[in-house]
Image (cartoon, rainbow, N blue to C red):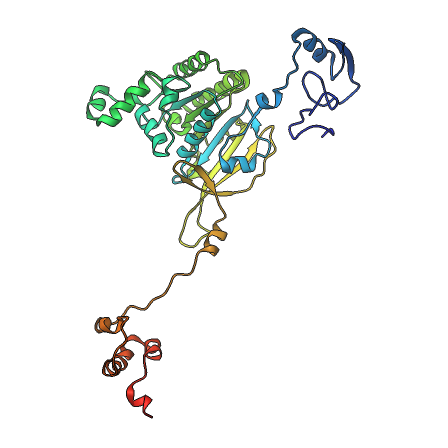
Length: 385
């Protein structure tokens, strides 16, 4: 890395790199006087653009990369990841992959970015309830259209009014709030319709170089269409959304139970993806327990630390990483108190017994074991010798 640049390769000041793009100058610099100031550029194109606009491109690093804001992913991505990435999240049952998707959404909303959620597995009201369960209030973002839902689930309902009639007041209210922020796909088996509804949602929010798209889930999509159609849909979304708009996409899937080996879509989709996040349950770390773990196997264009991170989810905080072995070591040992014999109740009182009671206590002690006998008060006959 050229001296004077930060971890992303962007120059810290004019002397360390190009006066327009802020990138290091790898070869002979192009020097020019702009508005009476001597400037150094990496190319004539950057020189001409600065003369044209009068402003340097200072936000290159922010626009080109993004940090997920999820603890386990941030730990594996010290410099973030490119915005033009299509990331597959492969998880086993029980790894709370939907909570991961919810946190990605919440962090993006907190950054002020728009989000479009393509839901194949939940109706809008249930999706909103999932966020509220995690203590993340998305209602204001739905109301101002910063958070939009492309509903690919409710097509399954023959009588949608019947679903709403059965809702309690709270769920009916959530459904009403989400309705204006939802685009319903009439037939999700028509991937062209899904793609068009997604593109319309992105276009309405001007999502270029900002925002996030979540697809939940590709496994469900694979049950609706032929595999070749599903693969084409993924490739088209990657081209149009990620590469064309520079908007990252995170798509959830279950691949052979999370560990591979299945021949169902999307078992061999990893070659298409820019990134692969794996979620698993590990039963080797703690006895009689399954520990949730996450790892980024690959992410093109980013520095990746491919280590398993153990995690759990807590409401209001989201994903929390921890060391399970250290957590077990820090736990105090359980107190192994012996159960008293049925007739020992009076002997456990905290009052000091008289000498007659002491004799009775000593006589009953063997029923509690040798330890109990050793701890009992000596009998009067023993004291007298």
